[in-house]
Image 1: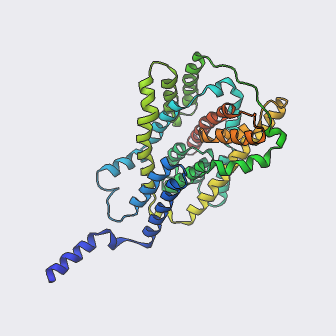
Image 2: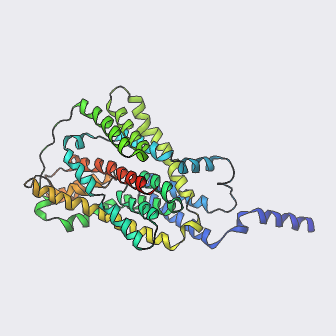
Length: 373
């Protein structure tokens, strides 16, 4: 009996139950809640579901995920050494049509204006006691670009990765709820009813020259984001070339789906109780909302300036798409505009600032890296 008791004691001591804490239990419940939001409510399920399950896995004690070689360590390697975000950008580029931005280059200004939320939140975070590196990582939530947020956070504040990633992806999924009240509050009924002129056709040469030119200029100006911008533009070249359909199809389907699973699961694996259950996490969630709302407001307000400058030819609603939640933010511009004027069709016009927002957020991240790292 003594031998049996010793054996059972050894089994218990080696089990996760022996080291299980209240914090682990809370985080597992958080993971289950996130799964519910992903599956039952449809909040970015492709991203939130693997993040949630990664969070659950991270809070099982004694798994050895970070110490022992294996799949989980390989996934964490891909997170910490910035492999997955550029690959996500490759797929995003292959799925994105830059035509609306090329046809109306002035919408690049709307994408830039929407980055105001990043810097408002950065200053707010510094005021609340975060270091400038932590504040920069928190502020980038306002760009509504998950891969860029992860990329910047890993470089500047890796200990905040779980909280920042969850905030970024949660607010991306809530675009249809957060943006319309801000858009309506900052515009008049007459402004929302504006019907914009049809955009000019874009030539194939322009579509091929644009990603090459952007890659050269931005990579030389901001080398820290050359991998992000290079992969984004390579994906777009594969899409537009007309002779690399197989590669484009792989990038925008099989590859991005595979990498999304690894990136999101790896992000969840960073959500350990000791890292996540802190006062800082609550502040990050709140500051992320400020950043996102500020970005939306900045885009709409600059849209009003463009409306005035063009004699009423620009509908300010497209400015809200300056955050880089592609194409969800552009669809919200379309929906709000069509409610004001059923004959209004803003989707393609809003895709210009939406695509510009992807570039703008990456540029903001690169600027922070150049200044702070």
